[in-house]
Amino acid sequence: MEKRYIYADNSATTKVSESVLSEMLPYFTEEYGNPSSIYRLGRNAGRAVEDARARIASVFGCQPSEIYFTSGGSEADNWAIKGVADKLFAKGKKHIVTTAFEHHAVLHTCEYLAKKGFEITYLPVGDKGYVTAKQVEDAIREDTALVTIMYANNEIGTIMPIPEIAEVCHKKGVLFHTDAVQAVGNVPINVKEQGIDMMSMSGHKIHAQKGIGFLYVRKGIVLPNLIHGGGQEKGRRAGTENVPAIVGLARAVEDACADIPAKTERISAIRDHIIDGILSSVPASRLNGGIEHRLAGNINISFLGVEGESLLLMLDMNGICASSGSACTSGSLDPSHVLLSLGLPHEVAHGSMRLSIADPITPEDGDYIIEVVKTVVEKIRNMSPLWEDIKNKKQGTERWLSFVSPVE
Ligand SMILES: *Cc1c(COP(=O)(O)O)cnc(C)c1O
Image (cartoon, rainbow, N blue to C red; front, side, top):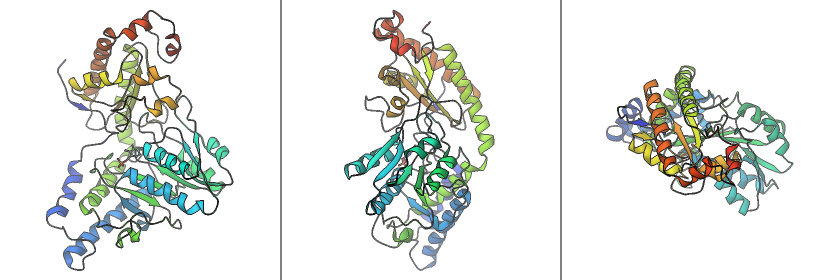
């Protein structure tokens, strides 16, 4: 088979698109003014920032004044959660509801707040990786300050019933925040119709540059200032605006949300082909996360008796960029907290691979991926003493088998 180069790690980051780049370029070299300056060069830059804010607001169905630019998803998550926590702790609200499989930007923020005296409920996500509105409703207490639940999971691609979750939060009078970094461009989002109070978003997952994103904050919610200084972002997040990045973000949001149904159909057909091809040709494998309500480009498969890092390195030698979970956890030998939250044993969680595909992927790329994964997994297993033990049904290995397809 002829070697291909396939970037299949779009949930880690994406390439800046031509359209985004070309909209950004003038703001580096021609329209380089400071948006706060009074002369025309400054006013042009200021207008570009406000245009971008309005364009983004119109895509998500909110007011421009409800969009606050940040350095990305992590900052937006931190601001929303710590901001609400700070304000409501004084009123005796010291409980936060989240899930066990949030991004670390949410989980580690919650852990930090736990040390400050908050109680955190980590909702279990079941073996398929979903939470229900009922679970959220049951978890909310008198002293709940905030519910924060991701729109779509970055490792297994499952999409949560966000409008229903938002509805129970409102019924109980609790603020609702969602990390929508992976959902934007995959799920149509209208924050008003869906009852979202705060929403985090990042540019580099949708073909804008790294280091830009925003936090949507519903009018009426006043978060404490994140950065003290000048009057930018209504004085809540001071610092001269990153004009080119903001302009690029608006374009990326428009592009990503323009043709969601057609894109979903095209990409998910290739996704399903890859999943079926791998599961049917590789024994002792499993798909992680339910196939229903799943991001169009997400494939997460475990292979028993395979070491995740070797798999990724061998895929790389064959021109395929993949990851073992989130970019933040690779490099550490701990299995992903997301896969463990599904109830997988370490041995099954460890041998897993995430592919996140996006345009311009083709069905032929899909065939290539299936072929390479099949060959590489076989190669690794042939060298693995663990795989020998599994095949010989050595005592202690049976437990893992119930999580994967048959060995023979
Ligand atoms: C990538 C990601 C983030 C972090 O966004 P940055 O812009 O890299 O800080 C947060 N949440 C989710 C779900 C992500 O996938």
